[in-house]
Structures are given as C-alpha cells and as structure tokens.
Image 1 (cartoon, rainbow, N blue to C red):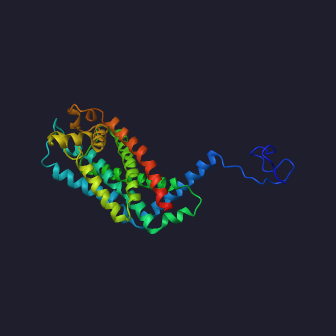
Image 2 (image 1 turned 180 degrees about the vertical axis):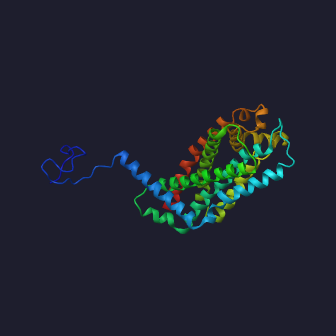
Image 3 (image 1 turned 90 degrees about the horizontal axis):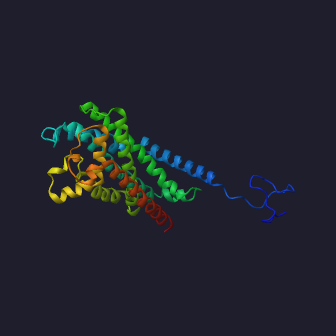
Length: 297
C-alpha cells in the first residue's frame, strides 16, 4: 500500500499508520549529512597520513628542510647582519623562518592532488558515496597537520641554536597559529595549482616559480628598509612579510618593520589574517569547481 503525500507520517515513524512499510525514504537531515561528510574527511586525512608513514621522504620539506634552513640562515646571515633598531639576528630570523618554511611546504598540496589525479585515485573516489569537497578538505587538513609539525620543528631548532621568545609559550603558540592559518590558506591556492596541472612534476615546478619569489621578496630574512624602492613596496605589502612580522611581534622578538610608517608594517596581524581569509574565500570555491571539472571530463 502506497502512502500519499497527505498521508505521510512524521519522519521519525518507520511505518505507515496501518503498519505497512513506506515506499519512500526521507532525505537525511542536515546534521546527518554533516556527520557523514566529517567522517569522509577524517578517512581521507588518515589515508594521506598513512602515505607519509609508508614513504617518510614525502615529509622532508616539513622535517629536514626546516632544520637545514634554520641552521644555515641563522649562522650565515647572522654573522654580518645589523638590524635597524638593534637586536639579535637569531631572534629576528626565527619568525621569518617559520613563515618561509610553511610557505614553501604548502606545495605538497599541489603535488599530492596532481598525483592522485594522474594515478586515477580520485576517479576511484567517484565510485564511492562521498562528496567531492571531502577530497579537498581531507587533503588540506592533512597538510595543515604537516604545517603544524613544520613550524614546531623550526621553533625547537631555534631554541637549540639560541633563539629565545620574550613573550613566553603563549606568544609562541599565537605566532604559530597565525603562520599555520596562512599556510592553510596557501594549501587551497596550491590545490588550484595541482588541479590545473597535468602531472606532479608540473605542479611542483609551477609552485616553485610562484612561491619561492613570494617567500624571498619579503622581510623573512632581511629588513625591507635596505631594499630598492620598487622591491621594498612589494615586500612591504607581501602577505608573507605580514605573517613574519606578526610572528616576531607575538614571539616578542625584534621587528624592524614596525619602524616604518606603512599600513602593513603597523598592523601586521590584521593584514596576515585578512590575506589568509581572502585566499581561502577565493581559492576554495575555485578548487571545488576545478575538481568537479577534472572528474567529469
């Protein structure tokens, strides 16, 4: 016996009033759909982390690179660098090193997505009852955890070489929070690069061409006061400079950028958060559309 629309019982009743089974199924509620989506994200995040455990060299940019860069830049630049306003170069450098390492490590998102597309893994995901957005969320969440590990390694290495944060543990946590938020935003940008690339090599090459100039034309390693005018303007408004300056202020370390009158230099934390939110707001929908296009062609 079929039940008409007018005769339908409440959604929590499994049977019709006369005891017969219903020939329609209610749509799952919003809470249930959200729970299923979150479960898919957790499964895909775990899958990405298992790949890292099986191939540890995938994490070299988040583990080995931070140690090498911290030691090299602190001792090479620190031997000759004089900061405007005074202060230790070691204390100045760590905020920039945290930011630079997280910026360049975000390329892993582009390489990972491009690799999954090239090997047909994402096409296999299409046969499963999961939302496409969970694929991107799982990838960016696993890379967020990698960013947190990378930033922590830079901080620990800095402590070993003599860096000291004047604002204590809470200041370090806050600085890492700003830097990791920016790294998460960049992972969505890199997701777009990976989805537009034909293979992982192309994704990595394009990422290097874009991210390395962005990381180095900034205040990560040197104060911007000594740069040529054009380069200085670019560096001052570079979001990487804002993140580096935010880390220094929250760590309680020397921040020569605060001696300039530019808006980003005077409000680095505001600029860093606004850039992060803007990148996510623009790149997340674009990445979703690109994934839909790549999986329906």
